[in-house]
Each structure stands twice: as C-alpha cells, then as structure tokens.
Length: 285
Image 1 (cartoon, rainbow, N blue to C red):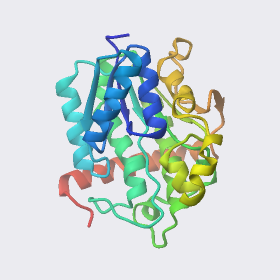
Image 2 (cartoon, rainbow, N blue to C red):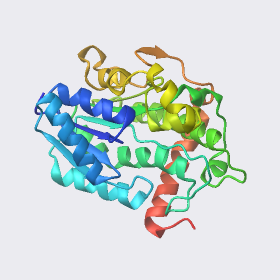
Image 3 (cartoon, rainbow, N blue to C red):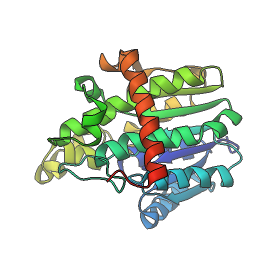
Image 4 (cartoon, rainbow, N blue to C red):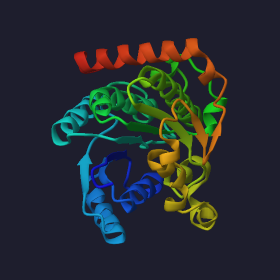
C-alpha cells in the first residue's frame, strides 16, 4: 500500500499515535499532523524503527487556528498528488474556559471546526483520489449532548465536560452530512468511538492526575485501542460503507440529536458560514 497516502491528525500521543503506528505497519505513506514538530519527529523515528516504514512525513499545525488549518490543506494539496485516507483524530479537553485565536471556544474549535474545515478544503483532492475515506474520531458521550450553535461557539457558562461532548456531537453530525454529499464521489465518511485508551484526554477528563498512574494499566494500549480506527481506514470489507457511526468495531446508532436531519443541516450551514467569516475577517473577537 505504498501508493496509499494517509493523513492522521493528533499523532504524538494516545489514540493518534496508535493509529499512526497501525497504518504505518501496513506500508501506507503516513502523514502525521501534530502541534509539536520536535515531538512529532521523535514519534516518527519510533514508528520507523518499529515498522520499517520509511514513507512517513511530519507536518506541524496549530489546529486551534482556522488560518493554520487552511494553510495545512494548501500545503497538502501542493505536496501530495493524492490523499486516500484522512483520519481526523486530534482532540482536546479543556477543564477551564479558553478562546482560540479566532475567538471561538477552544474545545469546539479544535475538536470540531478544525476537522470540519480540513475535510472541506481537501474535498477536491479526496475526490480525485477516489476511492478515498474520511474517518472522524468521536465519543459515545455525544449522545448526552444537545446544543445551539450560538451557545457552543461562545458559551455564557462554561463546563469542560459539556464542551467536550458538544464537540463530539458536532463531529457525528458533520460525518453524516459529508457522507451524504460525497456518496456519489467515491469518498466514504464514517466516525467511531474508539472506547477508552491510555491517552492524555482520558487522564484529564476522567480522573485526577494523582490516580492516573495507578489505574492507567486497565485501559487498552495505544495500539490496541487504535485498532477500530485503523480497520475503518483500511479494511477492504468496509470499502463503500459510508455515513455510519461505530463503537469500537461494531456499527451502532448515534445519538438522537445526530439523527435530526434539520439540526445537522443547520449546523453544517452555520459551520460553513462561520469558518468563511473568520477566514475572511481574521478574527471573531
């Protein structure tokens, strides 16, 4: 699969590192998108030693900045003749309220808007590379979410857990919308909940740091936890499967709000309008 190009975001730790290792083991040309270039180079060397795969690139990007995401998409289009797989994995959990450089609540900006925009900007290349796949990483916690667009981009009262689950609902919604738009273009779009993995988000989201080292061994390793995402990205028996939500290796039913076609369409349209406005104006502040 040396002629297959796979882009994975958030690859320097946890689930993303496991995905990167898994796809590299299959001989795929791996493009690691990460926030910390030096850390990304270290992980690249580790993966090369473990897999023997020498077709691995590292690209540094700040996913909290829409301008950086757009620049990333432009760089990818210039550097690669094809993109066969896009895995939107990067995510954050923010206990305390913070704004992105665009003036958007940062969890929503990084977890959802970045993947939404990157997918949108790479649509032409994905279509030209068909058959191609987009895999979005979400969480089953999205089923507890229900929000208005205006509230999530600038919440009046912040709650880290709520912001996280709202961003994950938005990911499921955009997955279903993109799948519908691309169903005749040879590009499949699916999302999955990987389940608990030894990751920084699990450490910060679920437990106090004091207890993390004690209970971390009960969670699956990075590589084992990443197996469902790797399968969704590469398995031949899933070719043509699109618009689905998976929990680990099994297809599942997403939350009620994600099944609301009117809500999904509204979110999709407002997301497009917001990112265009921010990219044109430079800031939402």
